[in-house]
Length: 453
Image (cartoon, rainbow, N blue to C red; front, top):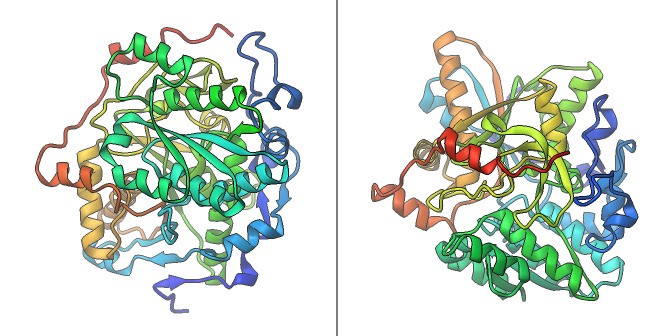
């Protein structure tokens, strides 16, 4: 059967339920702990920060499929199902016998996969009768997506944007403002935790951990507001499972079985969403796949971090999560061009990695941009820096197939477009981009203040 360049599913094939991978895991991810008592957090403990329905999803480890509300599915239909693309041109250019597919999530105004969870979280906030939500954003994709979703449901949206991205990506900031969001560079003087971070780190370029702390403080002290998160949490990975469910359905439509599945990894939501149904098959003994998480060498939580309980934020006000971490105080170099700047990893993915169900590699950013440029010139899509981490390793695996003659099928997630990342592309083209790889001593400092659990 000849496989088209783009495999589209019909609207009727759009998933009707999210897949909760934890339901099929024998070794469940460790529970969130109260940062003061170190006891497992209950739904009641989380009510002051998160939306009620989202708390239920966060804590649910037994329900395999959670129905997607009609309102959310109707919104999804504006840009989903997203295409699965056969990279015929890239295969030919590489001269590889490998078959390469990528799931393209950039076909919406936010430019990335983030809208899949943003619309769900905004919907549940509206259903709860809230006035608005607060959040953080790194490169800006999540803040853009959430501002769109909040505008759709008539909610106020307060975004704390990592300072270096706020300065490097003014157009992303302006898209958020176009949709009605208030955008503040983080760390800021607006919050107690922001002032504390600035006192300890004068002139800091910020991190996702800093921005999370500020957004949580504002949500917990402002009546009618709750905090929502664009990655890391299991509820977000749940919503992103639409990516993997559609990918699996598209491959099944043409009787294609993947051998290798690759995704970029920061907090873990897009990677977790892409691999969820495939890992489910692995866990149930129905099929086997090689899963590869790709992270930046400047922020290598899986490849060089510790698997321990840690704070989810720099201000140490959020729950403790057992995850691969570089320490909540670790702040990546400001010259890192992507949004994969989080110090830790989703707890479910961390458990899968600890159990040997997933591999991880780290790559330098100049190599990432070389791959991004190569891909753009051949496949015609300008990829986001985050997505390009996966592109780099997918091309590496395809070249290995050329050397061995193996006809493997490689699937990777192209999480979004890079049109708001031209400052980084400019630095790359001008030869001003540097590779930053933290020393063991620097990582040791980041891990020095882990909570004693």
